[in-house]
Length: 280
Image 1 (cartoon, rainbow, N blue to C red):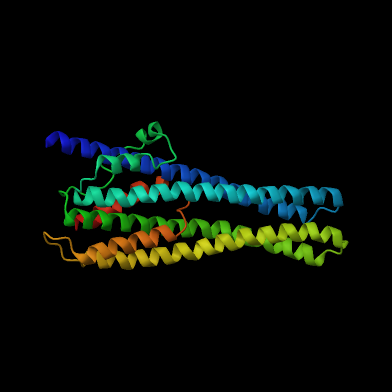
Image 2 (cartoon, rainbow, N blue to C red):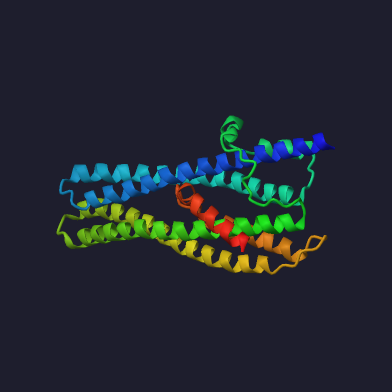
């Protein structure tokens, strides 16, 4: 039995490593997506001042291909995040309640990732969840509460960081629009500029949408955290906790991915806040 428990723990640690590696891959893809969006806005702004038809058309073609790259990066980022989110749900339930899954299901979970197992080894962490409780409803509640707290903090930080980026893009988009409308160029020049303005507007719309989504996520997770705290725990798994687990997954998986680098920059601060909260 001890050997079986040890092997289960090893598999859970391995799964956490793969989960974190998959999130890291998704974060890298989102980083490049932001860079492409920034380049689209910069080129669109430059195109607003280009007075030569041939050069303006070239910039428009480059903008078109950058939009395709943006779409492809977003697609692969969503795929990696989806894999990581499935692993997160699995680890919360299996680790929290101490469930045993069949070897075939465990193998399928390991093969579900887009990252290599060697990449996952660098992210393995036996103390990824701070809870020191034994497996059961109480441990699941504490792990869910911790996950909700972290997600809420990261959503707020992502909202604040994205607001700065969206503000810069909004100013650039306004300049592009003014140039397209105000400058007295021939119609053929305005077409290329209008295309750049449209792409700039798409980037701005995407950023504003994510900004509001982060705000909503932060608020909903704060409310959810208070609901989790109020759930009474006994030997039986409370149905309310199962419903709150489903609510948590729904909130975080329908929201945008956290801004790349936010976790690394804030993890020590959030850890201190969590420790202070649990010690009171």
